[in-house]
Length: 414
Ligand SMILES: [Zn+2]
Image 1: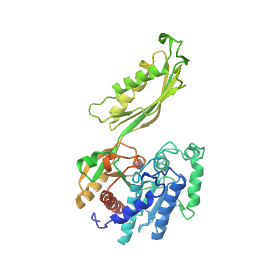
Image 2: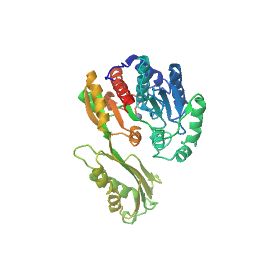
Image 3: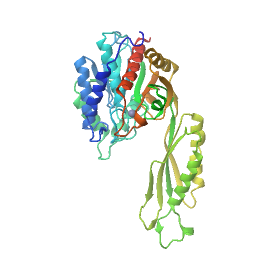
Image 4: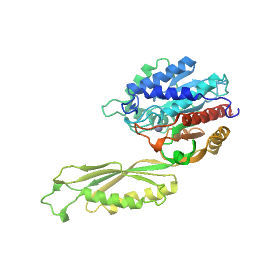
């Protein structure tokens, strides 16, 4: 089927964005819709209602992932799928995540309006708890769906108030009594996700479509520095085991280790906790985190493997323990997906560029299951995870048109 056979409705797409932005909308114009809160469940219910009005099927799995399905002519075939997440950060915006869901839903509607029968079913996915703001870790729904995380462990996780993910998924199921069950790991023929770029490149270069080549890998480290609490007035510096002094030396040395003149490498110490945190006590303990990202597996290995040694070297009289809670390899999306995205962008004359993703997305896990790709659209000043997050209606429409074209192509693949 030729790209652009089905035209998406940009106005309807924008209206849906504005409708969804009201669910958990903040006074500053952002969105606070943490995973499976009352607001997020209303968002799911709203999309399920839109689906019902169209005659689309609604499915729910045990991890709280929801799927809207437009049937194909061959019910034995795995679906072509697009989608993203509906949850946000506490001071999130109107586009991160939900744009990918609404792009997929608009594609289903546009294909339905055109009365086109596809060979494979086409589905819109809403992955549960992508942000990881209420429940950790993030990107949970797609990880469990793809068999990369354990369902029971994730359902047992609790938020800051002690509410379990399991009880939230039960609440979602109760709000969607009409949804049919979907087994985790049910095969998918191909997955494509639209997302705002969350970075400044597309805007700066005047491009509308980011053809995402892959995702950078990341390694995270938890560093525990243990010294000894002591009186700040009486303990000579020479006798102290000052965990803060040791930890700041480590931080300084890590900055040197991760220095990158090309500014490709991402290195962040996002948490730095000093204990006991009293004005007159030499700190006996510091905990800090290291988040390190790079598109090259070699760089990730070479530099990441030095973190522990660098920390030990600068521990002074203190003890240091380094743990690595996550290590995700960089991924490359297949050329077939990049080509399909570029063909569509060219057919419509959308300026495009190849770009890699600095952030993690559900596509990371779908990539382990089926041919996967991503489309980025510009967002104002690259701002995201921010109430001021903004995107242009015509850019969202262009990205959604590409999603629609690629879905149609995937739906005919053998
Ligand atoms: Zn997102």
